[in-house]
Amino acid sequence: MGTQKKYVRNSILRMEGYTPGLQPEDGEFIKLNTNENPYAPSPQAVEAMRTACGESIRKYPQPLADRFRTAAAEVLDLSPDEIICGFGSDDLLTIAVRTFCDSGDSIAFPYPSYSLYGVLADIQGARSVVVNFPEDYSLPPELADTGAALTLLANPNAPSGTMISPGEIKRLAGRLEGMLLIDEAYVDFAEENCLGLIRECDNVIVTRTLSKSYSLAGLRFGFALSNSGVIGQMMKVKDSYNVSKPGVEGAVAAFEDQRWLERNVGRIINTREKLVFGLQELGFFCLPTHTNFVLARAPEHAVAKNVFEALWKNKILVRYFDMPRLDDCLRITVGTDGEIDLLLEALGSIMKEEELQNE
Image (cartoon, rainbow, N blue to C red; front, side):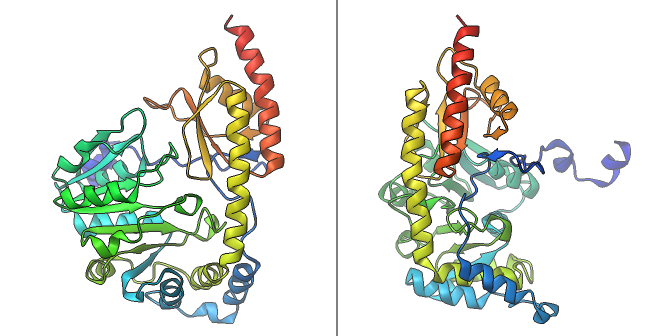
C-alpha cells in the first residue's frame, strides 16, 4: 500500500471503481443480468466484421469512423459533423467529462442511476452532485439548480427503466448553466427520444450504443450526437483511433439493417410485457419500463438478496444492487420467451419457500 500511495493520485486511492455485472464462463447459466440482447445481430453486420478481419486489418481504421458517421447521418437525418464515435457509449461519457469538466468542477446526476457517472467524476477530480430521484422517478427539479459544468441523465434511466419526456428535458436544458448529456443507451426500446433537442438546445449531447438493441455488446461501439461545434471540441479529446476497423464495418452494416433492429426490438417488447405480468402475479412491484429490462421490487415477505442467490443456484443470473433504494429489488433483463418461462417457473418455487420461511 505504501508503494501505491507514492505513485497513485490520492483521488484514485480513495475512489471505488465501477463494478460490472458478472460474466461467468459457465455457459449453463441463463444470463439475465447485464441487459444483453438475447437475439443474434444482423447477419449483414456479422459478415461485415468477418470481412474486415481479413488482410486489411494490418492498417489503422478511419480516425473519425467516417463511414459510420455518414451511414448514421442518413438514417437519423443529421450531418456527419454532428456525430462522434467511441468504444461503446462509456467512451463517449469519458470524452464528455474530459471535454467539459476541469478538475474541481461539478458533475450532476440523479440517484439511483448508472453508477459509472460518479466513477468518471472521481477520475477527473470533479465533484459529484447527486440529486435523488423522487419515488416515481420523475425529473427532480433540483437537478436544474446545481451549477454543474456537466449534467448526466440516463433516459430511459438505468436501473429503473423509467423515462422522462423530451419536453421536460428541454425545459431542464434551458435552465442549466452547463452541458446536458442525455444517455440514451436503451432508447430503441422506448416510444420517444431526445434527438431533436440537439437542434433546439446548444448545450445538449445525446449518447447511444449498439450494445443493447443492435445485439453488439461485444463489439463495443457507441456514438454521440450534438451540434457540430460541440462535436468538434469532443473530437480533440478522443483517442486517435478509438474504434476498430471491424467495429466500424460491423456498426455500419448493423445500422443499415434497420428491419433486423425493428424485428428484434419488437420481440423483446412483447416478452417484456409477459415478464412484467408474470412478476406481478408473483407479488413483485414493477416500475413502468421503457428498456430491455425490468426493475422488480420483491414482495414484503421476501428478501431480494435471498431470491437473487436462490436464482443463482438455479443457474439463472439477474442483477442485485446492495445499495439504498435498490437493495429490495432485482433488475431482470428481458431474455427470450423460453428463458423468461424458466425464470418465472424458478421464481414461483423460490417465492413459495420465502413465504414459508417468513411466516
